[in-house]
Length: 167
Image (cartoon, rainbow, N blue to C red):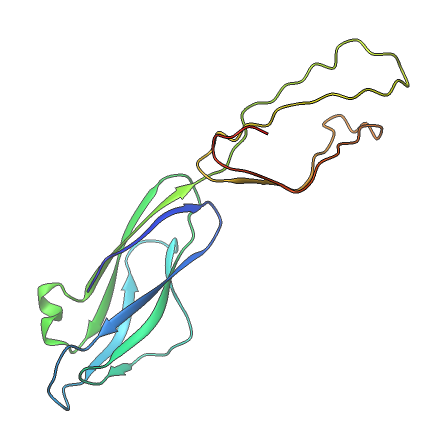
């Protein structure tokens, strides 16, 4: 059985991986019956429902299902999924699959802006810089005034800030 590496996944997002369990026997009637699966730690990794146990895999056949990874913090994760079955080689560890993934976050550098001295009721244009210092792209869907000033307006189109780029 192969191991799965989800690589980098943004915190809170679900990444799914299609997984195949194969019965490599060529002998007719040597079916593998999977009675259950078990992921050892927490719900960061999970099997995606849509099937019921027991699962019977005919000789030469396979079964496809999905495993999900949804990190909750920016750190590496590792776990093991274990299948309980009647397979002869399950005693030598071939019933285990190591799952790996890295939770990443998108984050902004601290942006401070000094408007300087301005006259009341004056219209002023200015630019500011957003810098993505996280490990994932940042999608900007809106900009709000931190002080609640209803006279501040920002003009932009939908932005995606790739990692470590400036806009």
